[in-house]
Picture 1: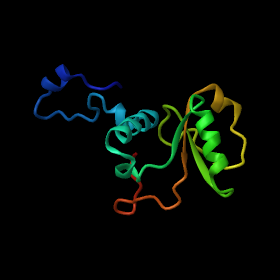
Picture 2 (picture 1 turned 30 degrees about the horizontal axis):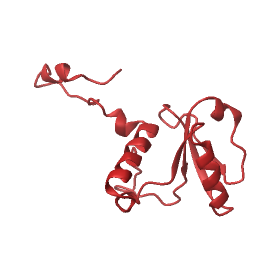
Picture 3 (picture 1 turned 60 degrees about the horizontal axis):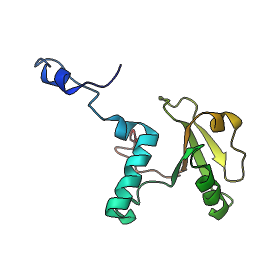
Picture 4 (picture 1 turned 90 degrees about the horizontal axis):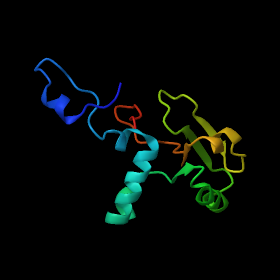
Length: 128
């Protein structure tokens, strides 16, 4: 269920395959991806990461999220995803003037500006 450690990788047999790499959660968990990209923006500049939507991890970033909502157009839609859920569980859309549900503020959640026409690969959305 967890990620493989480097020792386990070294001990793989030729017929075995690996689907979880060490530190892959840096990219596959929504909040971790956000923090990784935020660090990279500071290091390399925002121009290289314009493909990433504006994102906040709640409740910690609630002040920033409220500021972004105040500056956004009234018809802006946000997508709210539970911190570590998968397979679409618990995801919902939030209108810009909609109330953030109390359970989102009690647990952690990742909120991003909704991308109406996302980048597709072979007409399919990618995992991240």
